[in-house]
Length: 268
Image (cartoon, rainbow, N blue to C red):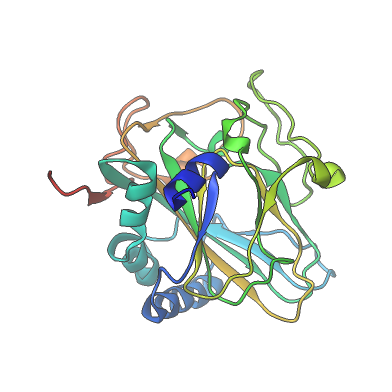
């Protein structure tokens, strides 16, 4: 029987049960309420006017929302990231909040994260933390093992699912997962507040709309490890580099005002 660390290495995503106490879920819920009341300039509404529900995303707000900062730095999230990345230190990259209100039709397109980001390296992961009960039918899905395919895919636009303009010939278009679901091992879970999905920055993932009667508020904490360097790549980047005040020079380690070290492994 494999360990959960081995499952993460093989599949690129694992569900961790009840790793965050109610206190932390309440903290994040207060932060999301503050965020929705005053979205940042980077916030994006993906639901067109006149359509039901609301699909809203916002990120890079941890400096102005104390609840986010508290969770990202003081919860067990950094230690979990360090353990599974097998890293000696963990840098905070950013946070990403995704809210799908009841009746939302818009899906999250299939994509993987690293081609969007201003980083180079392999040790990058996210913790996807639901603040509401989530059924398998409305949760994020992951293509097991896709982080080991050796392919990088062009970033997708969340508002219409099309590719962003690519300026890197190494990037490919994401395969049509939904039309060939039987050809892949797709992972997804029923989840409760306190659970989290840990996933690799290269694993393909997407999510359906929220046609349920429940909100789907999710907080994603993104961290990097030892081998990651700051990098500016051609084409589309999200979050945009100008959203990282105090970032290091390209090619330098992440340790900086923009990406503080939030965890270190204990000395042997």
